[in-house]
Image (tube, rainbow, N blue to C red; front, side):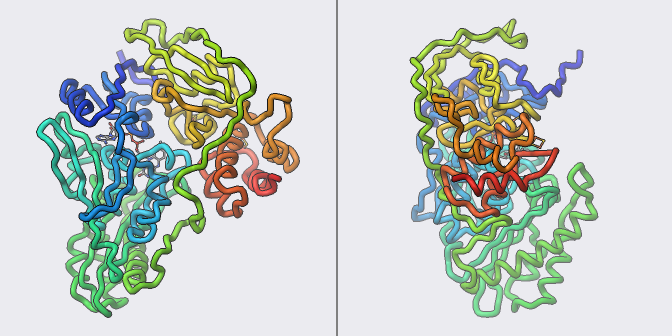
Length: 497
Ligand SMILES: Cc1cc2nc3c(=O)[nH]c(=O)nc-3n(C[C@H](O)[C@H](O)[C@H](O)COP(=O)(O)OP(=O)(O)OC[C@H]3O[C@@H](n4cnc5c(N)ncnc54)[C@H](O)[C@@H]3O)c2cc1C
Ligand code: FES
Ligand code: FES
């Protein structure tokens, strides 16, 4: 029987653990072997489980392990915890100041929601050839700290990938930290990251990272790495050898671009053609070399280029004050859902605060936050669109951050504060000023997308009450509209009193 499904519901059943130490994670991974998967942000793993490409028996969440979301400067370099979000790295001052390639890779990454949910460790361990963090970390010479049954070891990031979706992680091992050497903070060192994709919030057709060290007009050190153009992220060593010890010159740059395009082994796929990938790698090598060269000369230092905006946000979203609506805590009887009728796994009790009201709920391990909100609590504002992270119509705020509730396990949300579109309205029935603005500017274009758009825009305004148009467009870039467009929406957000 063909058990594949494309319903994008999470029909698989699995056990779920939330250990509180790395040693406990290692013990579970050792016990279950390849039947277990680590769960970080879930933006890759839950999609793969929904389309039934992977079927783990055990999910080991990193959510309760302390110390995995830190960015810390130490003697041997910048230590980034494996569970640090892409968004936190994008806006970390140390990263923006000294490690431009990494900051730019994180800025280029998908949607606002995926940036908040996705982690750097998940990005590397997923081992996609199109990973945005991998080429940046390769040129920055990063090492990966792995913990396993035999203790800790370090692996250079460029040796970590062994094929599409494959890494050198051994049974029982997990990625704990990423260590970026301090020498890239040297004033005569510059790095850059570039990406070409079909639309702005998408996985790369091709990406490129460049690092240059210079002494006067001479290149004294060089690294080039590319993604989405080979089975694993790839270093272009022949082009590097050509550039190293040479005087920086246009002809040299053009030659290096040509050689780099010959070193890759791209394929035709849904996102691009092999021919286009070879051509664009030439362009990206040229542009990346010039940009890194300027930075190594002290120009543009401290300024990270982002495709859409100047980078004004603080990494941590400010907390949302959802304000209780006066309801007393109550228990909700779980509503039977057809896909769980024969659940082999016990249900667990979780506590959620939703729109200021506290709930205790019994959920199965494969219940998604979106289903619980819509079916158990009958708050139907958040919508099920694509189910795999691509439309953002299911956006709600979780602990003040916009998340895709179709990719959050309800069990992982235990203890969280959730705000849905229903929570924007005051208990007296008054609409939020943002909702009023949407009405005034005719931005409530359809009932399907508007709740997600409102929740994303509300998160933006909580972080930055006076965004520019570019900032609004960047923040909302993942919330799809296929009817009218974004002009009225952007106007309504900017005009919000
Ligand atoms: C709509 C959409 C757009 C996307 N756009 C981009 C993009 O532009 N660029 C890009 O690079 N990626 C993109 N991705 C992919 C994904 O968001 C990133 O790879 C993200 O960083 C994954 O992190 P996560 O924490 O969500 O990983 P998870 O889904 O939690 O985990 C991914 C894999 O890594 C394993 N894992 C996670 N953490 C560890 C650890 N510490 N040790 C061992 N194993 C671990 C998991 O078991 C799983 O196999 C996109 C995904 C979606 C759904
Ligand atoms: S992103 Fe969640 S339903 Fe589309
Ligand atoms: S707002 Fe829903 S399709 Fe345009």
